[in-house]
Length: 507
Image (cartoon, rainbow, N blue to C red; front, side, top):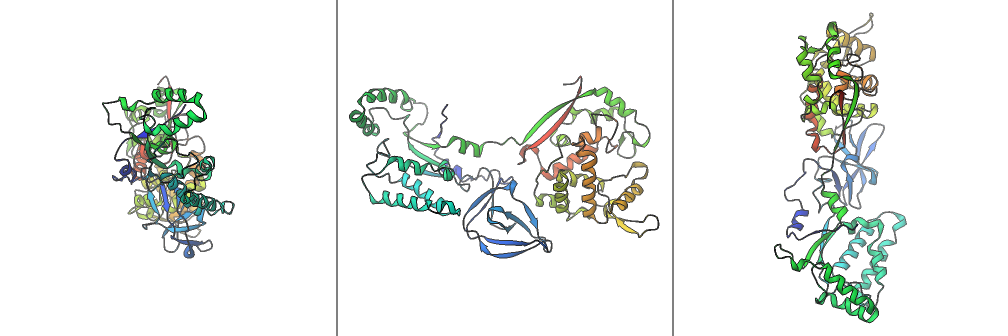
């Protein structure tokens, strides 16, 4: 199978510049230019200082793979440029953040070819014009290549440029072809969109085919008749009168071009079947005695209809609610800025975004979930356990303790139980509580087959046992806060995996 990707749109060159700035709010790439000042990190102090080096080439990196670190003294954030073994400050004009539709900035470019003949590399007439431009673009790529193993490549391209410019009437078409298809710089060629005469337009009698056919007449006459028949069968564009089809069209690499602009599937939904019927699960929930019974908030027990409403998966598939089915046993890779913006003004949680991200990395858990959960449990950092409370045990030194996730803060003794647990685990600062609580949740729930909010609350594998919360709408509250941070999951850059439970007897 052979795939062609072409266009006759006069606006294609403008399209490459992304004039409508599509995707600007969801950048996928980080691009840096030569001459950008680099910074180095002092591992001992966690601070950054300006290096003597600058970037010597341009580079484009997937934003999802670029780590962010903050200066422990100034809180200034830096991107780590791994190819440069250095850092650059965030928040400046450079490096640039690019969407997938910033095609020109991502290296896509256009060339126009106006050959007199389709027999372009004939070994006689030097291929000036667009072909020389292609060789020059490869020369520029080789010049910026810092690999010692490729140090001589630029000289070969310079030699070919000199040969083309000399006007020499003899050259090797195969040598030029091989130089053009150098796998080390294939992106340069595959991102080049060429406007050229189409062999779907011109027929055997047109002048552009004559040098090729005349050469066949002399060198391979048996192929001339076959080629003429083939060319006339292949040409169709002149016969179409209802569309604007001229003799030349834009020709792009199908995989490179379409791969750049296609919508990325950013989520997967898995459906897991459970042996309990939904009715059995509801009955078990309603049979839970005492303070562990399903609650509506903290004021009263939930009714059966309220349990049904919030346990039935098919009721929970709106954009925000769907996040309670998100598998939270891996990072979401939201930016530090997004997390900081969400936590701003939330009492003791403000300024702790880096702690949530680090805890998520260390314990294999979703940082959006951690921040959203903490915001819910602490009343936006303002509750007794959230803002810090004094506690002592057994006549030991009194300390201010924090409990960001309501761990052991059971309804019958929420504050007392939460403070005692925080004291025993050494949660004496917001950051320690964020980290320690994340570790506890990771070990007790997320990495114990309860890796979604829904499973933490309802435990469909074993209903009415080992449940994190009593409030029937607990997962929805946290999912709504996660939505505040990351937005519509359909538009999220990182691939997300959801698991929706299917109870016995339901579809």
